[in-house]
Image (tube, rainbow, N blue to C red):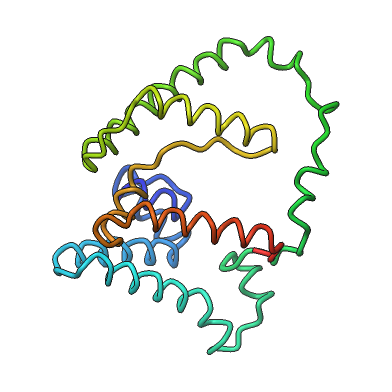
Length: 208
């Protein structure tokens, strides 16, 4: 809860004095954060099927995002200026990502003085990956091969890095949610459908 308040308000929430300061500086953000916390606590007390809860939460999020603009007729520029919406992206072709790659801009010499930091980050990420895979294997009973998962993750991230992408690893939270909202034995199918939809969205060059 404290971390959520800190992220939402952009201010520390380590004491009552910090909360009082947040209430004076960003009252709306603090009120929204507290309302969200209370809502989550109430949902834990009510027995709602995970699938239904997921649909309700997703629908409410869409309404909260688009209602001010569609129902209250608030200009989009006003919502963007107040930080409620992001700036609208311009449509670009999906291959433009690769056109912007310029290996000549890579400064290898900048990495050499930071070898210790690089190796430390690699060790931490490796340990984190082992813990993530172990957590997924524990609650899913999938009998995952640790060595195979580590190698496959490394190969995929190396290929993504060549395309200018970001690091990606296993997510126990997303796997758990996928398991709860999917039909029994259909978790892999749900993941594949999500991947295909994301790929289609990227290829379509639809501005996000």
